[in-house]
Amino acid sequence: MVTCYCPSELPLLDGHTHSPRLRAAIDSVLIHSTMGHLTTLLEKDGLIDVFRSVEMRSQVCLALLELNGIGFSWEECDRQKHVMQAKLSALETQAYSLAGHNFSLTSTEDVAQVLFRELHLPPSCDLSGGRGKKTLGYSRRGTGRAGLGKPFSTTKDILEKLSSLHPLPGVILEWRRITNALTTVVFPLQREKQHHPLLVMDRIHPVSQTHTATGRVSFTEPNIQNVPKDFEIQMASVVEESPPSQDGRRTGRGRSRLIRLPAPPPEGAVAFSVSMRHAFVPFTGGMVLAADYSQLELRVLAHLSKDKRLLQVLNGGADVFRCIAAEWKNIDLETVDDTLRQQAKQVHNIDLETVDDTLRQQAKQVHVFYLVGT
Image 1 (cartoon, rainbow, N blue to C red):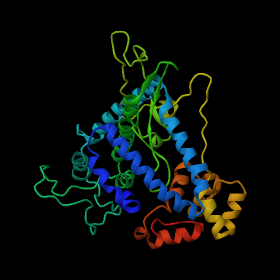
Image 2: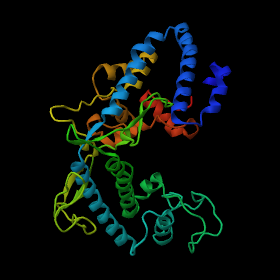
Image 3: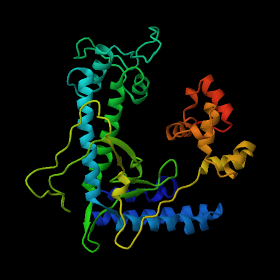
Image 4: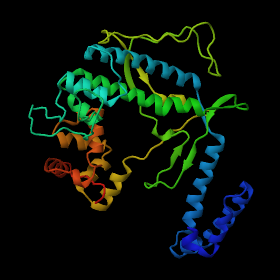
């Protein structure tokens, strides 16, 4: 921006590697100069009022959010963690039983070896048994796995297709989902929490990013906007020998005892609801308010396109994605479950090059779709 708007002040950047105080002073000078040029452009486009009354006020809110943090319940997060760890142990036992031996669920080569070489599942996902397609993945010379010269793909899409042929791919998918929730959400949250002595509670202080390509606010350290939705896992129970303390230490002699379920889980297992969002709590006397847009993009699309069917659905108060799913699959609206609704939301969010004739026909049937890159 300095290069574009005030290149004459570029020499100031030569001192940018000195002391933090000097670096902050240089940043202030350059930002002030750059902002002078940007203000002129904003006034020219009639956007200066929006910038001051909307953009900058939202920046103040985000700054307060970073400084004040978000309430965090270590006890609730730890309870969720132990339920998930117990489920992982059960899934590992189930996977080893289905494979007939132990293997590394974290190794794509081990997973591919078990699925495609030992269980003889179709690596190209040709569920009809055809041999015409080449295997997915890439070629690699000199792999250390005996009999596995070309590593196969074990991505989510592949495993979902293979789940109809054998139970092991479904177990691996569930194991990956829970492992991902632990490593990307639970552990970072527990790592980043800070105790607030005045409020007598733990709090998370994320860092906001407003220069995203989508225009949405993103958070890092930790990435709190990517906390997964609630999901249920089948467990017997989780027994703790001693409750965790506020500082994370455990009282008593033993650690939490995690129950390992046999494979498959017994009938009558309890469904535990895993909700990492419950770990975010208000301070005493406060509350957490959740709000979201209601199909914002589709409402803009309906306004611009004047599509009668879409306008009828949106103005009628019905769930537009359930209606899309019902028309897409040609089924009754009442039979659309959450999984099919999610598929309807995702069907239009793909690259143009990947659209085949079948998907094009589906798009014509549901009336509303948009393609990334068009």
